[in-house]
Amino acid sequence: RSNVEKQGLQIAEKQEISRFAGHLIDEGETIFIGPGTTLECFARELPIDNIRVVTNSLPVFLILNERKLTDLILIGGNYRAITGAFVGTLTLQNLANLQFSKAFVSCNGIKDNAIATFSEEEGESQCIALNNANKKYLLADHSKFNKFDFYTFYNISEIDTIVSDSKLSQETFEDLSKQTTILLSKP
Image (cartoon, rainbow, N blue to C red):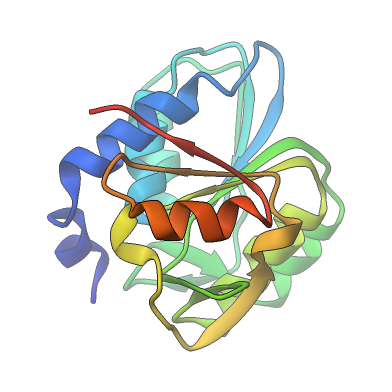
């Protein structure tokens, strides 16, 4: 599905997750925000301006460009119009040299220990950003769990915290809690 199609899905849950996750950011940090409609919502809900944000998502960049952040950096590369993300060798080389206090990514599916997305190239850029972050956050609404997608880019056990919404099943919550911290936002 395209970015525009996905924007209409789980809107309340994405806002709920985004508002909650905003409280995980401290003044003066350097954070990475990846591509995806959940992260676009997160960018809209960022509670502070005194931060440096690095992104490879044109929609996230455009949302944050309306604000007066301390520092806003767009990582370029090959443009993937369906999601608005920059990907490929140039993106990966630029991300490889950067360090983040926190990285916020999303995904299309979480199954067993695998975090997956549709595009190998988008997955690769998120993997590098996560590897270069002191704290790794996955923002995913309940509809993403127990779902496959094409390219596994990270393992649940390597994520510090998953932020999901209150509709996540108790069974899924308990299973994943054995591997990482899960925070559920309130409606």
